[in-house]
Amino acid sequence: MTLPIITYPNKQLKVRSSEVIQFDGLLHQFLDDMFDTMMSSNGIGLAAIQVANPIRVLILCIPDEEGNQGKENLLEIINPSIHNPKGNTLYQEGCLSVPGFYEDVERYESLTLHYQNRHGEPCTLEATELLAIAIQHEIDHLDGKLFIEKLTYNRRKKFEKEYKKAQKEKK
Ligand code: Y12
Ligand code: CO
Image (cartoon, rainbow, N blue to C red):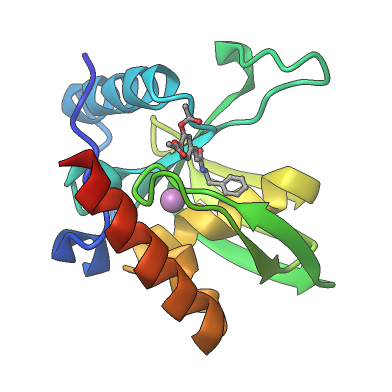
């Protein structure tokens, strides 16, 4: 089942999400719904708060070299924490909650991620490139932050103008 995605400037996107303590069937159904929602919107990452559930859950499905986004590449990440961040990199980011807007954002180049899987088992992964960037983007959602908050003052002003115009044109 797909869920509605909330979009900027909805204030719910500013909420800090809470730790998951129950790894039960309800959580598994929710993770499946998040996957359906992300795939039907052509996303590669989604945080639970984007579908109005303030829990520390995110999913990522980075396409392979051929551009295929198979479920075998799906990462379900619960209660994550970043360790050993290294380097800096710029990447043009987009977000399903800020449709139609893409901007360069600076992130760490590589990191170690500690998290739990859908069964509550502790996991670790080493992330570089697009995966490292996407992890940081999604963890920011869990802390109530959007990538547009990392823009310079002038770029943020440009965004507000363009986004408002696009919203008006949609109506
Ligand atoms: C690098 C940077 C950011 C991320 C976070 C995950 N972001 C996404 O998955 C964004 C997807 C996206 C998809 C859209 O829809 C289509 O392209 C059809 C979209 O829609 C419009 O722009 C209208 C916006 C964002 C991961 C890695
Ligand atoms: Co996002």
